[in-house]
Image 1 (cartoon, helix red, strand yellow):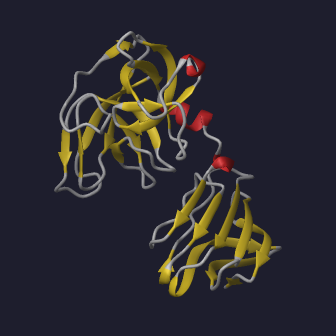
Image 2: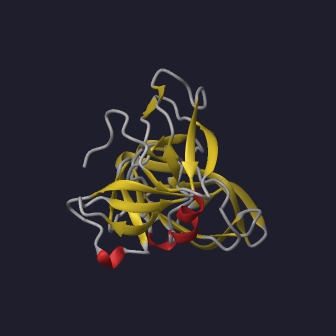
Length: 248
């Protein structure tokens, strides 16, 4: 299936424990009624899609058009902790093997058995005669079932590095800012490696770093194979190994 282009019926099969919530919509986004919605890296709501680091929250109760608005200009009402009917992907379809296990987002109305992004839609409860899938969708499932060590991102633009990937591969054009925020939990591991780029690539990674008691706020990657291996201590990213990265 393709992502929604219009409202669809809010097809909630079961929801006795449903929670009603409101969240702020991302800039330039239209959310259709009945769509799976996800929280992006900045905390704003978008139609669910295969993007590393997003988190599915629930099913939109209404259409909200924020295509001309800034981040948070409008809010969307949604349901979470509900069993909803979603479409089944044709390429990587959900089968009996995935019942009562995690299934993944294909787009805002479609689930699939596997996904490179690892964005969990929910838990498959049944496959209907028409091929659709009943999925239990709840905001806590994305966090509970994700394995960040399995995720790798390749960053080619001036974008904050994901806190939902174990490895960030940097391939900038010229000099680009690619900041790294605080870790999500104490003990979180992170590897950052420059794999190349164009036009004398330099990646400037701003963040809180610590090398055995020496604090730094910037890490500069200047050439392919420059690498940092990090662990989040709760206050800073402790450097476990540094290969030719300039810390300052």
